[in-house]
Amino acid sequence: MGKPSSRPDSSSKADKKFDKKVQFYAKVRDTVASLTAKKDITKKKKFRSRQKKLKAYDLSALSEFLPELKAPRANDFKLNCKSRLKEGKQLSAVLEHPAFQADPLAAIHQHLQNTQPVLDEKPKKKKNQNGGRKKKSKKSKALSRQQSMDI
Image (tube, rainbow, N blue to C red; front, side):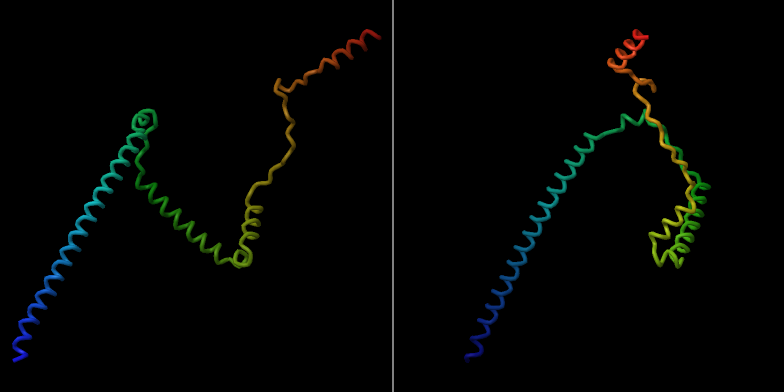
């Protein structure tokens, strides 16, 4: 007879466990709902602050003073693609070159020396602020006057 009396207890224990689970899931659901609500509120605040900043930096009034851009043509796009392919091939050839693999910086330096035009660097004469004329100091003027009087 001990077994039949234990069954109602076990069913009540199962009911209690089930009720606890239901309560736990309800709490979890409520917390998730409150967190998503908080998250939505912070998103709205961030969005509003961004909108305010964008209004502060509204440069649409300047658009009338700027030149209008022309739409890119299909031919230009094709040329860009062709040049990109050509440059890609050239880059891979450079990367595979043994001199570049041995010392990349030296190879680039050598390439620049070979391709850049030689500049004749002559020291430029500094011009004075008064158009290249030298100002005579008061002492030199006084000396020249004395020399002319001595003669």
